[in-house]
Image 1 (cartoon, rainbow, N blue to C red):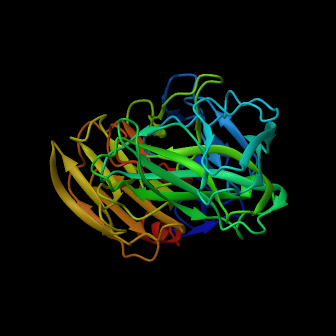
Image 2: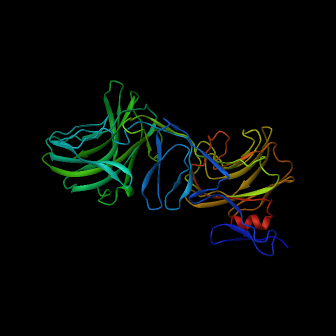
Image 3: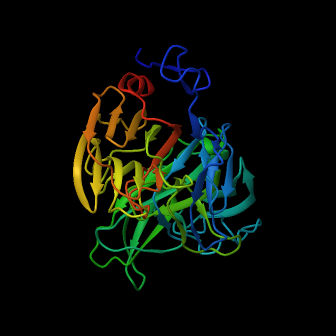
Length: 431
């Protein structure tokens, strides 16, 4: 009788009692909040004492040191991101001192419209986010924008840059104010101001919890003389307007990309660039990849693939010369599986397109005669022939041995079966 698979309330899969493996439950290599002891994990930070960040199931933020797996958000899926560098904008807001006017954080400045002043009225943490409360107050005597600006970041014409910050209205209102914006200015090497732009957040920022209010602005550097970009929070109001409100500013971040990065934090009192390497969940079974088996992956891709592939799953020999790779192909959401032996692609099998932000499932089953692969809503695809030689490990969320083609998403689960499941069971696993 053909085997069938049932999904248990725990999220595991088991063969039914009259099927191929009575009562068998998959080995759960990855599941929400937990890595099996058989799984390895690595992620490098530079400097080594820098931190990445995550949110708990309740939305509270915390720091993670290098090599600590990141289970993130309400679903507590395992985050798998590629490596990236976070330019220094003093994300911890080190150096801020409460007072009248107080001391702005290291690298920051308050300047612009005459008649408007700023005051650091509080510093602390809210739901794990470092913040400072800045009061903007006074009567406007000229119509220039007032800038509360962060450090300069190297950037030239054509660069895409993004500034983001958590913000919360603590006191007062925006009555009479023309604009309260998050923005970026371009500067020459002198430095000389060359122009700017921003997003008005009036009507968006409220007194609700800081963790739920993160605002951003993306800009493509336009001026040929541009040498740096400077992020800011700015206030614009007509002459004679009385201004008085307090903003809570938390974890400002900057990206040299059209993306809002997860905050990365330098060591305390040492503002600097931070590089967070790729998340690398790796299964390396003793004796290498078994001669037969099945791996079932459930995941959420963060976005369509850009200029490079996004990985779903790779089984390899430690290099890309011999591997079985499931990937989201560069330039969209088309997915496939490839069999590569001695550097030559011997088979390419189609997989269903994946929808960013939605849960997807793929399953790969193999033995000495070849392999089968299928994704949710797809048709079983089969390769008959020898598998690549020397397979020793499986990387979840990757399509390159060196970690350069990460999913940039989340892995909900990776389940392992000890044999090549038959087609009806594979289809049930991805249903």
